[in-house]
Length: 403
Image 1 (tube, one colour):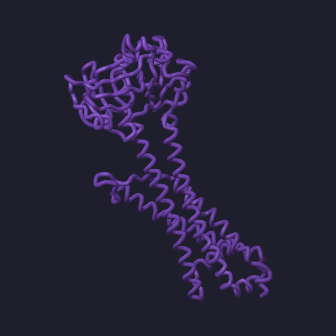
Image 2 (cartoon, one colour; image 1 turned 135 degrees about the vertical axis):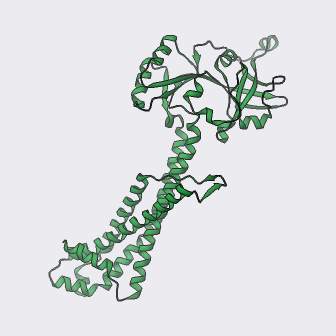
């Protein structure tokens, strides 16, 4: 057996004759356990919050989305659509056309987006699950609005006698002239009868009114080939990047293809930044806590000074003596980290199983058990333990042994 490792193990198990040293060692070990458990729990909680936050947008966003490289709209030909329908790995696709609009009902109004979608939209996205009440409508002028718009305007469902009105500026260039203002309205309008209301999250709930694609194309004075985006549902047995390249070959460079993460780049960056900031804050706490390891090892060195002299007299080198205390510090931090992660895993497992911590009476706080978080915590503890043990063991020198 390796000599320094054997001695370090014995020092780890043995008690000191000085009660103060035992108390310091116990507190040091306890701080490492609590610190590593806390770091693992917090990282798991943030992972759960990230998944929970993205679940809202994932129901609305497709696997892949095509947006125009320049401008707001692009055209898709019949031959391109036929090629997409026959593309291997593509389950389905849906065309859409959206524009910022002015919504008005009686004396209330708001600004939102009118989104025209075809019949495939509900099968391409998970928007069906977001319907709060009502239905998707069977009539041509039926539409579905977010619950934020519904509450703001107070629009009744199936109000055919007095529907909500959607206003958009007429397409064209230049400013409104006095002649054009007097001759006709400078905007197009469309009556929409709400047949249902969706609810996802606050921002999306105030953003869209969803209607039929031909209706919105007529409102914006676009032909049947002009759209603002295409939503794609990818067969998960196929590589998304491979299918993406094939779609790019069909449609060409007029569109930009975005996956789910790229569609919500700002949200992903915000969540990742929050996760990193939390990790760094707790790592700083661990760094401060691991100063206890340095102090505990130095106390152990002083307590075992006579033993070190004996070992030195028996032929142990200064390097081997340093290795003994370095190994002891590393064992303490690694063992504390493993126990802390085990305790953290039990806490996360109990939350996943029983949901004892609630956000609301019906919604448990979201957590996620992630092996990557486990490895991050253990590697952080080991690295910090390595540094603190190296610093403390460097106190062993010829002068100390000879004293």
